[in-house]
Image 1 (tube, helix red, strand yellow):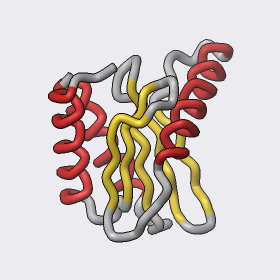
Image 2 (tube, rainbow, N blue to C red):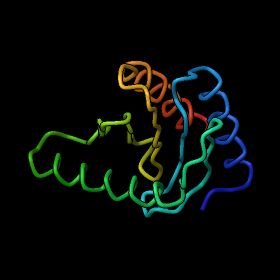
Image 3 (tube, rainbow, N blue to C red):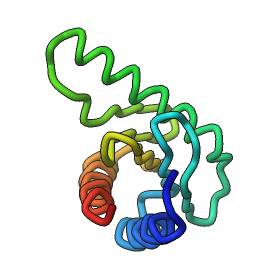
Image 4 (tube, helix red, strand yellow):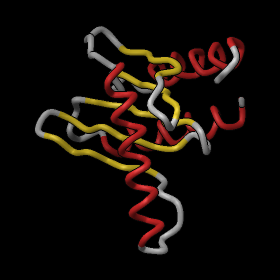
Amino acid sequence: MLSGEAIAKLESRLAQLLHDCDTIEAAVVSTLDGHMCTMRQQAQQYSLERLATMGSTLMSLGDTITAELNMGLCDNIISENQNGIVAFMHINNDLVLVTLTTQKNALGMLLSHSRRCAKEMAELL
């Protein structure tokens, strides 16, 4: 489990992510076994606790698929939907970052900012 200091660092970085990229409406950090570490969201309220569990399950599935195909580790999974985009990506071997936007044309921004955030979180830990 993460220390209080580590969680505070992750929370601070999530706040910075949402500040830097206003198209990202919510972000979650969870463990690979589905426990939420921290979350942050803009004005709209989402139920993010279940997203933590689903995000970790989806990343595990992505890892299994890419391992079966000998394609290396799964970097991220993108879910494009009628009302937006959700991106799932590894922070490290233990943590997953999930970000979402309702702006259908914001995939590049979502991925760019989320990747940078995940990399910086890995360095913080």
